[in-house]
Image (tube, rainbow, N blue to C red; front, side, top):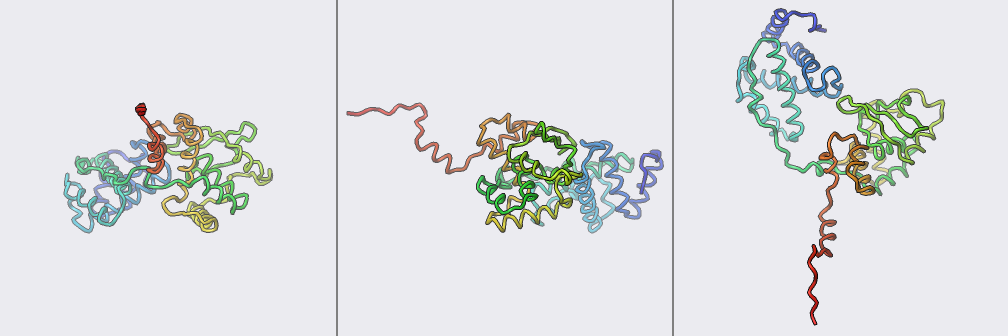
Length: 314
């Protein structure tokens, strides 16, 4: 374990130069993550999920460079970085995944510059991958009927999980980390620390409040849900979908959060209410859920006059 804070600039540079000479990927990954927590947008509050993503991204890129020409790593070699991103697309990775890998490479070069071993920033000249699918088409929401069907086949714990996703809009990390000390059944509010380590209060729906209240007091120890592993939660929802005859693909666990925003917007028709409940930093994100199907548009336009008064003929 390297304590980068205890190293002088000179010692830091020597250590990184040694790692580069030996192709020591572990040290370069450690350097990148330390620098990310110093200068990245999340700083010291960078989430474990983000750290895992960057750790993997740096390893993938360094593996690519090793297979080509390690000596090109410190050069301002855009052919290398562009070739890497193109290779990712050839593998069939989505634009979102490619851009996440690109961010990891960007963090690596920032860390190398911080260590004083290069001034190069070849990733700066590589464009981000363009999304070819609209945001609302990337993952569908569960319908009102789907949610009812899932609740019908679930036991009390599984029902609570569904409602935390579909009524409170919790993300996966928030679902598995929510603790009882953050839930106030009297005020019907719970406090959640979510994306970007931002903390916010979420009001409980009547159904969610009832589901939480049904949990025996002696079982309200630490975590609200009994599942700690995201993989277990995914398998659970897939199983519930199978039993309920509900499609899981293209929805998955995050689809419950999409359902929360979509259904709340349908019922309230208020972007600001939905944005606040979903903890969106901007209503532009919430507007994603204001989409309507082509059939609904067709139905709306069928009887629409647009201010044109029909001419009465005799």
